[in-house]
Length: 104
Image: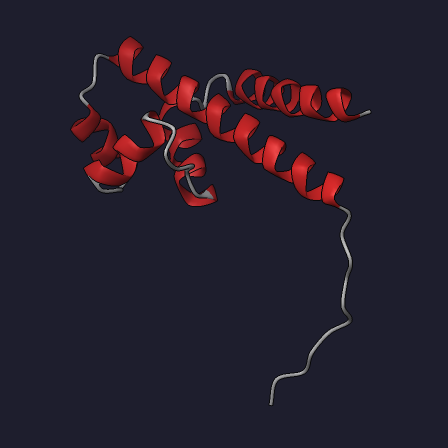
């Protein structure tokens, strides 16, 4: 049997900030994927294959229609950013911190 948990009430501002955080994350990853693909001279198809995803799913990330999963992000870091993962994560942190600063 399913057990219902407590009802949690969120304020509209919390939803707005979560949406802005998601958009900042999605855009940061999109730009980094584009930069990497350009630097490595890879087609979208090759990048998709390396990240073990379909071409359509990869294209949706690059065009901003979708965001990558944590699994895809992990594969990206392992395959392309293992030497500078701290730089990548610092950039992500800064992109997300800007959202928090705007809402303060």
